[in-house]
Image (tube, rainbow over all chains, first blue to last red; front, top):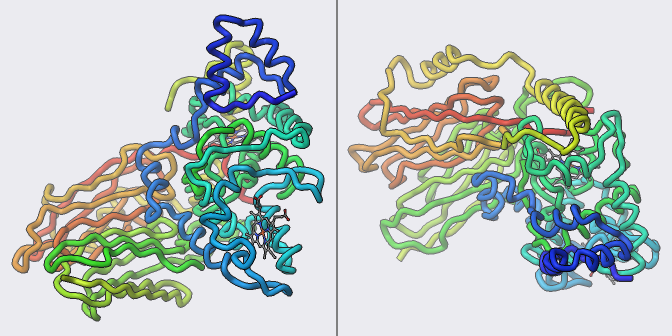
Length: 278
Length: 106
Length: 164
């Protein structure tokens, strides 16, 4: 059974149909693996907005111009690392992948993606580390290390403007379902779920910040709060601390499932990496 | 760490006023923040920036810890002749970075 | 930005507000930890100005300080200072100095220009610990000083990283 793909056009079609054939919509949604309540479907249909839309003009301008976007500094480093032969194999990313502008175009928009050897989805950072260990015979880079962020920023930059395109593959379904349930599960001392903030209260203000819809369109990104570039997992850890929940470890399977669900939920939205956020 | 990003138009007309933009990686640690163990992180900032054309200063800046991390600057200069524009950042802990960009004036 | 949180169910709503207020309070504590010393005061700002420009009293005008009225995070607030000056050999801006009221230190930066600048305009990004007034003072080639200011509201980020 195909998953409902929340791309703006298809779900818009569905919800328009719904005003005329409410029963048809119910059937479509309830037979889908990841059934969405109509309210959620409507939310995805009508109001999906990137965190960019919640920022004021100065921060948008900072993101839009490579000269003012501080993440450009990380991307530049990534470009340098891309061409450096390393490890026992003495090979560079470029030796195998050539020019990132063509070989990495659209790649970040498809991650997390199913990996046959791991038999589960892996995210972009893990994919890069896989190449380092398996092909370059160099050790993996630590999560959130400067070099890993630099490389992932460089790779993700090649998807800017392209639509997020998580594959509709059966192999991913159980992991998507897991990510979705983590998103809806109440956790932490505050007994809150991600969905309570990001689905039910998006656009409202919380301690001065506007709650965004949690679309991971811009990662890795420069967060003013961090005064540096960070991954999506770092951002999720911040939200978990806010919920007074113990954050998963970097690279934990639960994190990748959550990333996968968030990316799938944003399918069709344009990539902004590297973005700027407050 | 990354090379600074510098934006200078590669060519200009004699007497033209051009905009120069720079972006450099630096933590600009204020000296007022607490670190992981609660101890204050020592100050680590860029203190001075100088831009010169063929050795003659055209713009400079003195920074305090209140300049944001990864400092960005934009300023203007009237360009009269082709030459080398040199950018130099110096600061705490022996920080010193310098870059040169050529501009050709017609 | 300030619409109240109102989930459909009133009980839910109260609980949500209480919980999120705690979360926001946590964020505020984190922020306060990040700013250790007592903040500077407007008097300290005036003292810092005297120290930088001497006893001269700056005139109001000729200096335009462009700052967003509201920023989502004070760690990088973009600003542009533009001074009304012909920028000729006889009449130009020599320097622009920036000050603020409430950071730990009131002095922010100085920019040194000359007639060669052609245009007296500088942009940068600064840190602001709180909502406050920022002042730019231009020092002219005739020895006069001119000033312009702007007020900024700085909101704080929610659910930031735990310090440990």
